[in-house]
Length: 611
Image 1 (tube, one colour):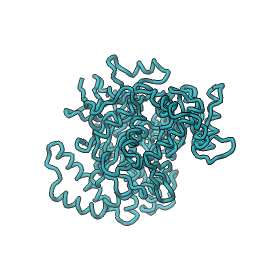
Image 2 (cartoon, helix red, strand yellow):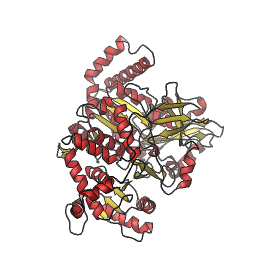
Image 3 (tube, one colour):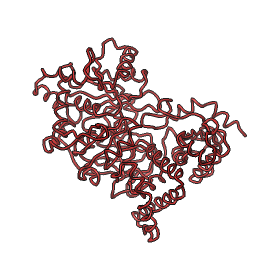
Image 4 (cartoon, one colour):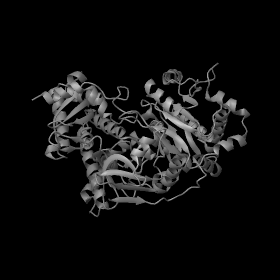
């Protein structure tokens, strides 16, 4: 059994918790800007001392409300400063944060309220308040759950952050300190529900040790961008996702300035005005930026220039990667060509990220190797990592000095990664969760006898400990001919085509592999204009010969990466968009494969019936 291990770099006292990390920063750097709040097109810094004062005031309000150490408190909101404020205040009160995705349905919220039993819920606005109240009634809870609004100015009869803070005036500093310090590394800090790509979401118990040990060790493991002077980042992933909150703990531990952007329409402007130095993102963000940049270049009559710059960036990055493996590196001709594009093209791409980003971290799902090379060659290093809700944050990551494109890196400090005889990735270490909330049977099922977590993912470990994810056990397709096919890499390759919004590779029990493709409607209009087809609708495009020919080229490119038995023989274009709202994507934009197949069963049958 092959195994890779990275030893823990920093340990912490067992009686400490995540709030001790914030207190340490506030003691040593009280004037350090921990957060930035948007004010028009400007940003106002929130120093550590000011943030701590706000946290303590709100935490006292929670104690006054009757929240006790160990109680669950839920938060349902888009990403915003007040989400973070509520989260840390919950920890100061000794309580446990239960994040709820803002896109969750009443049915999903009802299940979380029933399972986690929160004693109070923070909500973003009036709409979320009503949804939570309706869900509470549906869950069968007989008690009334107090709801506190994050967005409201003082309104008669409405509980807000301000009124909760005022209620805490009667709580002493000693009482708050007793609640805060009652939690240790082994105590629960959060119950995070899985995004539910299959089945009912399970509540993962994430401890203070999971968050705190990840934070202090990550700062030492990735110092190049986390410890640089005036490091700052823009958080636009949902804070209901455990990775986003783990990164927030890293930021207040390391004195890194963090700003929030909870609106997709505002994101590009926020990047431009805030100018982060590093970013946490998911593959779909990189795919969209790449597609948009290529489209804009084509509209400006510079499509060939962009294509040449892309080829050069990828070739340059591949050569750099080869040098890291003992090869020769970029040739003089390639270096010269790269230098030209670094003046003419790549700065414009970097400007999309705000102009000062040099490092990004990609997680949640695989990023295609081509795009990783493209962005690195253009001057934006993508550190791809791997983790699950159950691992709190990445359990492996490519570092600045140890990077192999196509892999998800080496184990994080305090982490051991191994493969079982079937190739399943198993993980043990500081980030692995304590178990599923109120579900001992499910917990026992995912842990081996010696304490390793069974991830359900398939992988390979090279001789230097770099992990590559090759598929997911449950997603692995077995055709009627008995051929095992991993759909993920084929889907990633298909999404490199600008017209492809999402792709689902199918073939379980079928005579051959096929694909369901949805179009990227933002890309369709400029494509149609460039091909003299202005006004082409998505419904028309699904049957259009030129569109189908373009998509066939994407299928051909994907097929070139696999054996003949794994190749996509047929595909069909669906005239719908896969989205969070449609129920086909999780809030972190991962595909819900089973939902797509179930909702488009007729199209699938028609596809296999065609001769």
